[in-house]
View 1 (cartoon, rainbow, N blue to C red):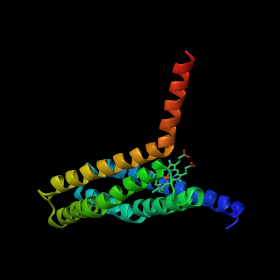
View 2 (cartoon, rainbow, N blue to C red; view 1 turned 135 degrees about the vertical axis):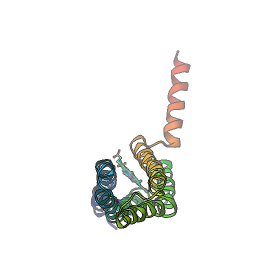
View 3 (tube, rainbow, N blue to C red; view 1 turned 90 degrees about the vertical axis):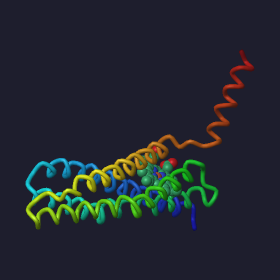
View 4 (tube, rainbow, N blue to C red; view 1 turned 180 degrees about the vertical axis):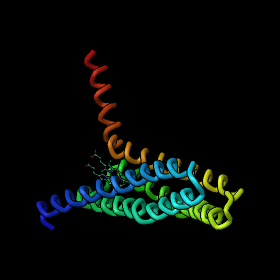
Length: 178
Ligand code: HEM
């Protein structure tokens, strides 16, 4: 593959990486707002809120996240090959943890809360299990959001062993000259 073509492809993939990031984080914050807004309304409103949150989580947040992971790996391979810098491995590891948490904890807990909200509308009273299940889904949601923000922080900071070594060398050069 020619160098110019690789560079252009990496740029397009990085653009898609940012689209994925916007889709993912933007929808998470929208969902927080929907939940806040519908929680204090009628049972129908509560259930509608849960339906919207579940729908957008499946269709927008998860799609955005997958776009981000695939394009991130593509940019890394195009720029560095298999010998990727440390920060790219950290991001990959954090993304894997997020994916596992979403599949095995957040998604099931969120679906249960949505089911209890529907049950509440059908029976005309708030299900006693609803508050607990929504709190559990909320806890997992906070952990996932925190991990995504840590990953964003790593993306911007880009820690590398080389950076650490460069700092050490600069420090020892300063101490030798003084
Ligand atoms: C939760 C997942 C992720 C988030 C929130 C995220 C976030 C970001 C952000 C904010 C940037 C811009 C950094 C900058 O330009 O200074 C970025 C760039 C980048 N990300 Fe990700 N990323 C994620 C997953 C990944 C994965 C899994 C990989 C690959 C292993 C990856 C590889 C890259 C690369 C190569 C860049 C370009 C860095 C550069 O321009 O020097 N990302 N990412």
